[in-house]
Length: 333
Image 1 (tube, rainbow, N blue to C red):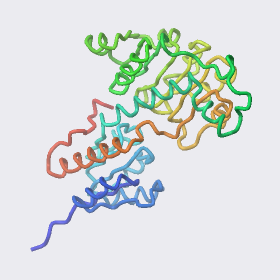
Image 2 (spheres, helix red, strand yellow; image 1 turned 120 degrees about the vertical axis):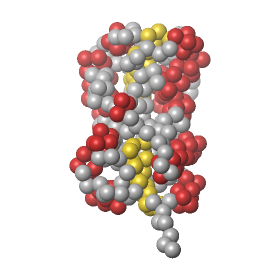
Image 3 (cartoon, rainbow, N blue to C red; image 1 turned 90 degrees about the vertical axis):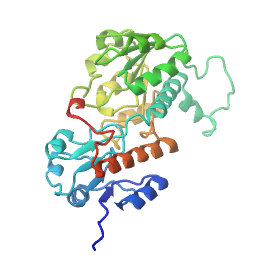
Image 4 (cartoon, one colour; image 1 turned 180 degrees about the horizontal axis):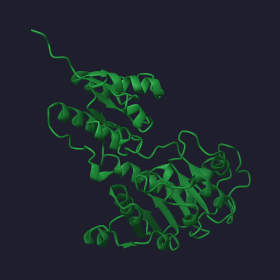
């Protein structure tokens, strides 16, 4: 009697050891020990051979690649919450289910967003370089390295989903006044608990807040949502923080407005052309005007393991003939 073969699961990047070990136990898992992003041809080959593909945000899976998918590929179990790097519509048309890992990175991303708000307002990273660079010869001075207090300021959250609400809870504890813009107004109880003010008009909110945090997904509708026109609505002392997706902000316009002093600064964990970062933003970071992080928002041991466990649950549920809990539906696109 022939033994039933394990499904081939191709994983495009290195995952935590505990996750990879469990995948090897359950599936015929092809792992990426070198942790280098797959080239286009290598990704196409993975799509041709796999029963299940486990990609990450570094893998652009567009219509042309999906057209090369083999007949056995029936599930793309994304390691991450955002799926804007996958042409989900085309995948669904080809009968390929797509899943993600929602919820598990909420608290960590909200923590990092709050950290960026504090870092920009209080010049934390700029100050952290002074002692290692031996630039503190003058000692303490009443007028040196002055930042701005965040207590009592208005925070405008663009996207009041899980992460936006988690950020609002933290910001409220720091004494910030919560304002938000969302596709739909959140429930009255949530709004009351957060003491949040809803703005149907994003333009009107931007003109009134001191800090803007981008926490919405990247979709065709949110591409350059913070356009040059909208960024010009901000106060000169306002700062912008983005831990969502780089494409939501017009980076060129943001850099230009910071350079001329029309916006005070920014804290960015994501960029339009990752991993490439605009030289103008790098120059502003060296001048202490912006804080730049290398997409670290959800980078904790706990979140990466939790994400891996969700991927495994989605794969196992799908292979057992059931609907995976985190499948992406057409109505969500």
